Image 1 (cartoon, rainbow, N blue to C red):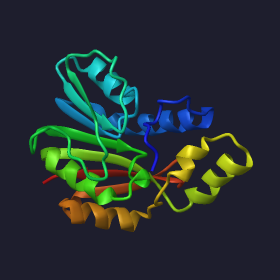
Image 2 (tube, rainbow, N blue to C red; image 1 turned 45 degrees about the vertical axis):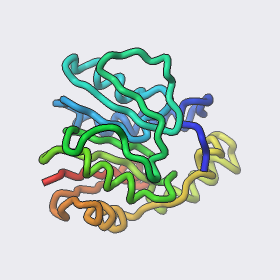
Image 3 (tube, helix red, strand yellow; image 1 turned 180 degrees about the vertical axis):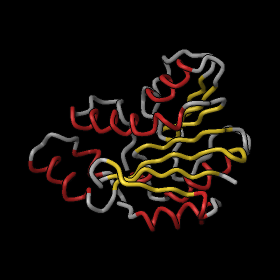
Amino acid sequence: MRNISFGENKASLIDRLLSCLRMRSIKPHLESVDYFVDLGCGYHAVLLREVLGKHSTARGLGADLSIDHTIDDPGLKLECKDLNFENVSLDDGEADLVTSLAVIEHLERPEHLLTESFRLLKSGGKLILTAPSPWARPVLNFLAYDLGVMDRLEVDDHKNYFGKGDLKKMLVSAGFKEDGVRIRSLLFGFNNLVVGIKS
């Protein structure tokens, strides 16, 4: 497993483009935010900082393997955590939104991130995550190894690729009700966008 967060080292143009497309795909879910948690927020906590900048009363917490500790925002707390097994320092039911974009494929224990997300959410709160589908594996390998236009470290670190059925089962096992989980294809079917609402 790698020991740095996305964005700590210079990311390839393709990696940055995919990150922007994932962020753009979840924007409709970010309208009303009081407490926002981003699990796997990346070194610079870009999404958190952007959302908090638009919602002056919102607060947020970001967690990843490594964090830029020079970020100074009174409404933002950043923590270095291994999301395979560590919990963040927030009480149960405090967050109305948890995001985790392009993270669970890097984890040996993705179920921990999902149960931690469920724990953090208040009733009616949303988990939004993205995860690559099995269709993505050959394409990412081609871009990283044959063309060299993607970061090999990112692709090498993928532990899993997820079908929609697998993701739904995992969220239900974490505590979400089956009818509260919505999954749709993203980026030409190479990625999944998952929204889980805690009832």
